[in-house]
Amino acid sequence: MKIAEESLALHERLKGKLSVTGKYKLNYDNLSLLYTPGVSAPCLKIAEKKETVYDYTWKWNSVAVISDGSRVLGLGNIGPLASMPLLEGKALIFRRFGGLDAIPLPIASLSIDESINVIKSVQYSFGGINLEDISTPRCYEILDRLTEELDIPIWHDDQQGTATIIAAALINAAKITGRDLRNINIVLFGSGAANTAVYRLLRVAGLSGKQFRVFNSKGVLGTHRKELLEIPVLRKICEESNPEGENVSFEECLKNADALIALSKPGPGVITQAHVRLMKKSPVVFACANPVPEIEPGLAIEAGAAVVATGTSLYPNQANNALVFPGMYRGGLDVRTSAFTWGMCFDVANEIATIAEEKGLRPDYIVPKIDEPNLHFRVAKAAAKSAIKEGVARLSISDEKLEKVISDNLDND
Image (cartoon, rainbow, N blue to C red; front, side, top):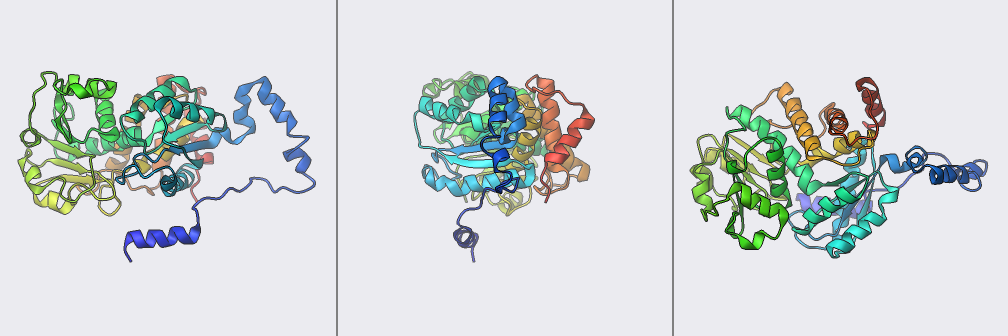
């Protein structure tokens, strides 16, 4: 059977990938402790001091996984109901690799203000919120405003998650090909949530805007693209990467490119062998569209690519955000971070790159696999320490205690 058929059969048999179980067996004798009248005691404690909600409820360990279904994988605007299988799968990954309780919450596709208000209204039950598959340009403002307005961490996996793992993969791809990140030229193919976040994160990492050329379906981004200048994130990219507004072609830019990072639309054939052959010697090619990469990795290698990564587990070098978000949330929630900063993302990217390097870098191994020992523990520790360093952690814990807290909370069954 094909993967799609097998997956459909499994989902139909399971009728949902999640269930809710209690931590304590309820019976007549303890009902008065777990419910009324005894439960009034923690209720009053929380009313008196709000921070104790983390001590008396599941808020300390829970995440809402929220999507309006407006951009699901490479499937487009298929709606909130159709996003449920993906959100459930995400919740499974949170539990398996982060020891976190994650709840799928599809919402209607609303205006930016309405979406923000709906998400803000559910904040009280959760220690963090994971935004998923929300269309551009709405997702930029939703993420930035929620980060500013809420005191729990907000994460848009298509932005921060993807950018973090791409940065980790690029760090190691540069090492394998003998390149210096500060000097390489990068073409970003696609200017949606993922690649704009890749740009933002690599700028935080110290790369110059002039090292990039960014393309969408209408051509290169730059100050000549007046329709994009109304969107703050895209305006910044236009002004920093192409301030002269040069209307250069994709093919022309590839001639000077060390790396091509494609996060656009599913292939095959979106990127061709002819495109790869235009690039500098031994280029880096990341073709990360899902479910099918823009170019099949074997074809990219045949055309001269030295290192190829995709977003799918069907090929080596899966640059998938599932390597990032379980540990990021585990570490962030364990120090009660109020935000996930871009600095945290880059610190975690460096840690992921180091994990792979310690095992031994190869062209077909630049990032760890999702089930490698200690991956999520080390990501969690890096995230927690970075949150403390960045000044967004409410708890400052010694390294020794932090390691114990993370180990105790991770679910490694």
